[in-house]
Image (cartoon, rainbow, N blue to C red; front, side):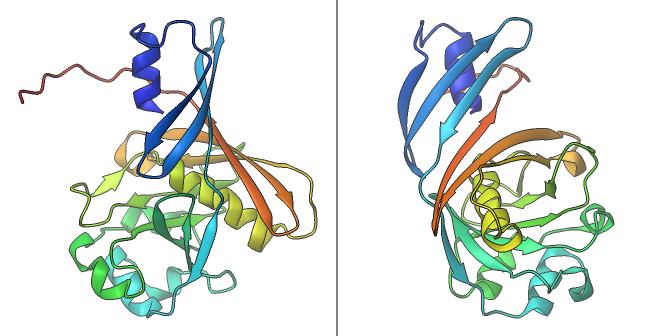
Length: 220
């Protein structure tokens, strides 16, 4: 989203309001909505969600996140999920646990034996923002070159599908969720996620914007 925002605000996209972008998560459809006094909102259609079981040790998983095994919510499944990039979705009981998390990313592959290159995405239903439904952090794969991502569009999308599949099974009506992330990094953000469902099929669209942080130059 930040890339699209930068291209739009610098005039590269001109008057375009619809486009496609090729990413590691696949070819994604983008819509732009410029609202007076509200800035630019970017809507991104994600790939169809996929889930796969996690059969590893919750004790070891908690250890590499820097928390206790008791902090993990076992009434909900810990599963791998993807709308293009795989992450391990880990339900956490309380928001307070997020403040104590200290990930050991280098050890992720030893715990994520089914998908050693996956990231880890803990989340809970307790939030800072009363309007949000879910809070999350995103700990990067050790192969990515980063430790943590402040706001993660692909992971937020699969969180929406997780919510529909495991927590709101009773209705086929579209779900509109607000997901918060980044508070523990001092870079709190919000992503709107819309989930449409038809039996076991889930359509995922995320919506958000970006802000200019700083300029820097790269020498190649």
